[in-house]
Length: 53
Image 1: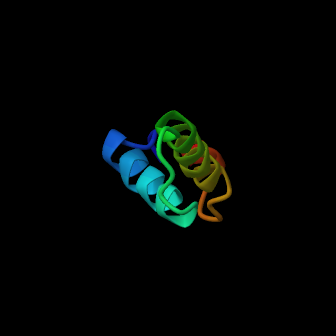
Image 2 (image 1 turned 120 degrees about the horizontal axis):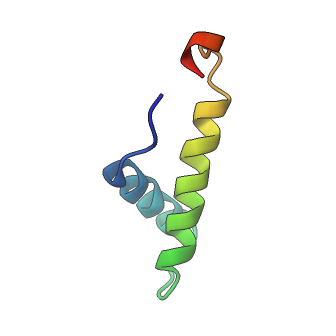
């Protein structure tokens, strides 16, 4: 699976922001968390095979 797109990261960051009560001034933190979550989700994908790594 390719790297997460900016749109995917933005959507995930928004979800994280909402989960944390919509605090102000933590945009970078939530962006980093979203990016990491999406990358980790790819690594744990059970459909990954040596051909897709």
